[in-house]
Length: 202
Image 1 (cartoon, rainbow, N blue to C red):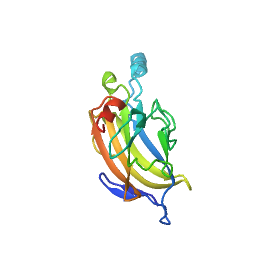
Image 2 (cartoon, rainbow, N blue to C red):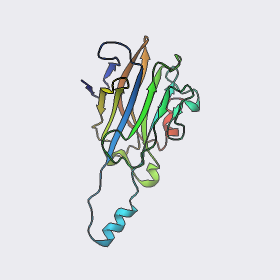
Image 3 (cartoon, rainbow, N blue to C red):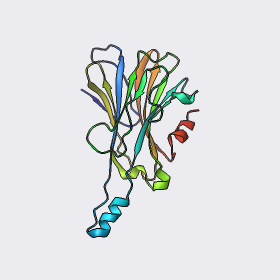
Image 4 (cartoon, one colour):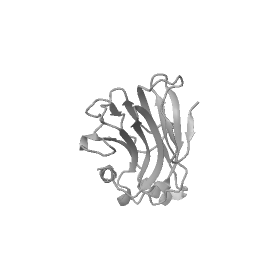
């Protein structure tokens, strides 16, 4: 059974039989709150002029908790880590549909030992110029799936009020005493791009 986490909760990432995980998929999802529809032709024009809320998921591969190379920022513009251990599976422009909106696959067994933390974030593309924020997002979550048997290990549903927040630090997978753990963070920020988010860890 998957563990439903609360903000700030930390768990060990292990298989049901206690063995270490080899490969996981980190799925991130969200839904855009749709404004009430206005009737008539002008209501139709208004709905056509409202841009989609484009959320972008990224992961920062850190050494001693810090980003030491720009290539360690894995996002839609740099989808594969140099080690081959991290792969971003592509960009979802709208958040439409059920389940994960974006996925990041991590082969923990191949990740070089000097990387001790993977930080998973989501930012709204061009949020400030589009006047968009996470108060317009609902049902946001991060979950971790064991790729060996496709079982969900844990899930963290973000339920706080994130009005005026333009980016989100969802959670982190980190290595401690040779074991992988997950920390549910759920911290909103006002960063306007993945570059600004990354500056927090340099």
